[in-house]
Image (cartoon, rainbow, N blue to C red; front, top):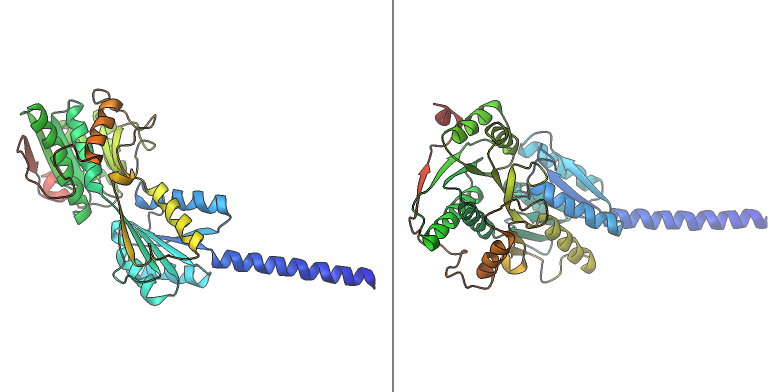
Length: 356
């Protein structure tokens, strides 16, 4: 009888412990919603996922990726519904095109929302957004390309969006600022928005034609087009500059990246969220903009990521400090006129025009 009672007590304790663990897991589940490319498309989602995974693994928090089968509202909404059904407490969206989907989550469900590179229209106690001052990173990349000694620059974008246009404008201004400071008059830049969001043979051929037309280096900006540009760079044996996620690990063709610190930003966001048991007053309904003053944008200068030679790490760090501490002479976050020290050609958008 005594043995039976002990067994019953042990079973009750085990059941209670398991129940608490299940409740805890359900209460602290993080779900990241992605488009068909998932978290392996060299985009914001991949960088954010790394940060989420690092935090969740070290803190015993459950994490699941929900990948839409198609880039449609119906498909993404189905993944949101599935995440909600499985007890998600915090829903994460990453990428410029994910804002509308984050709105669905914020409006139709009761869980909390975290976004990167996009915002929810409805800002309340359950939402928090993180943006990056990408113009600062792109400005540095343009300056670095010119300082490295390249005189024929290229910029290839995917879809023409406010973000890709910001990258382009800042990249141009960076190269122009170098020309103004150093009296360079022979720098040219050719820009083309491919209107593509996936790799293709047509995109490879178009990028290769840009290299063959005399462009020495291309800055690549746009989800889904990296593989095609990398193919063209390998054939032409020319370098590339990435945007957003550090592209150094993807290919040695990338000599630098106008990078945003997605992984660290994601880890920091989860740290704040779980420490407070939700979004606190500093985060709830707030869009946080991370910039050079918090060391969250720039050119990665760790071993293997910084492959510039003439524009040395010391030179870059000095330039970085000039921007960070306001001694450069301009405010990169504001609109300012070009010195017209470089010649810029913007090609018509789209594959059909480029291939003619």
